[in-house]
Image (cartoon, rainbow, N blue to C red):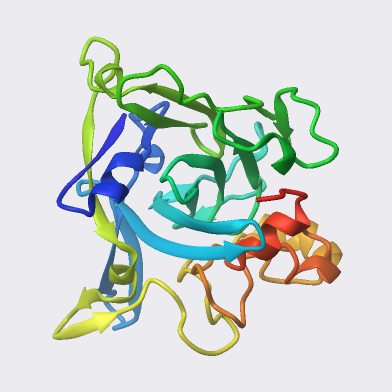
Length: 292
């Protein structure tokens, strides 16, 4: 289990999730840190260094008609989702990642937890015991949330726990979120239950300043056709099977958070590309029916 650590603002540290990744013996199931190098032909290569795992964070305040909120956004990356026909991994490709967004109210209580791939896929927003009753979507039924085969709890309960902490359980291979749990922090540090691996908490701005030679480069394409996408993260199966429907031939390719020209859309319907943009969180909430 990856345990976030390091010198960060208290709020970031307090709500940083731990990541439990099964089948850790396979390197592609290990969280890494983006590093840049040049291949023998002098071409830039981005890969994930799994010997130095990292969790990248950013703090994004926002406001709706009901109040002011703060999003704590955590990001991790894996070396690859391997090519596989049985089971079939539609997201096979390199450098894929996950985002976990913890939404706090003005009292710094978590009112929503959102998890998704850094491509915008498989987005799920879960309420907590602090979520106002009138903020739920109209069609919310209180049953486990099914996201393309994964079953997530209908609510996360922070109540009654000493120093509660979020645990994100990641399916091996595909690197999809398969469970979210709230546990006492002492339990997450119990060596009888978990093999603990430290993952350094780092500001997300560092993803655009990866050392390369005498200078720096970015994890993301900063211009051209691929602007706002993660370098080396093309997903051929998703392009073939979903590109025609979504009208996006880069569908499934992981993205930067907050590029105005490349929305982090969470709906495959082309006409909802901006309405479902996670980086415009008030609009995202409205699109998915949340009344925060």
